[in-house]
Length: 125
Image (cartoon, rainbow, N blue to C red; front, side, top):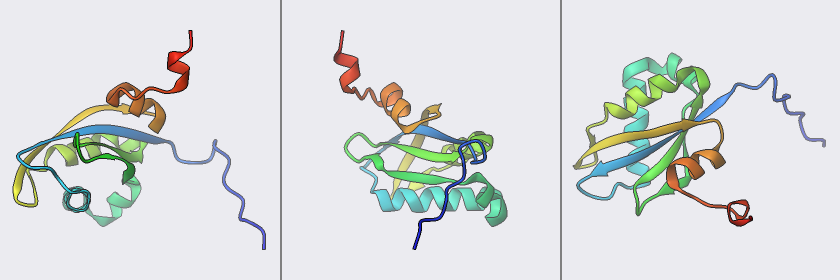
C-alpha cells in the first residue's frame, strides 16, 4: 500500500506560531492549559468558526518551568487566537494572565526569537 500524496506547499493553508508566556500564582499544567484555551476559543467563536482557526497547542514547545509555549493557528486568524488567550483569567484554581510574546511563521524562528534558543549556526563565525 502506497502512502497518500501530500498537498504541495502552495496549496496548503499557511500557519503562524504564537509565542506566549503565562503569569500565574502557581505553575499551570499542560492539560489544564489545553482545556482553558479550547473552552475560551469555543465560547468566543463557536464550533464552526473554531474549525477555520485551525488552532493547536504545540506540546513539544511547552516549557512547564518557565510557563512558555507555542500555539499554532491559521495565518488569517492570529488576532482571534490572541484575543481568546488574553481573555483567559483562570486556569484551574489559580488566576492567570497570558501574555503574547510575538508571532512567527515557523516554530524554529519563534523559539529563537522569543525563547532565546540557540542552534549550532549561531556559534559559527
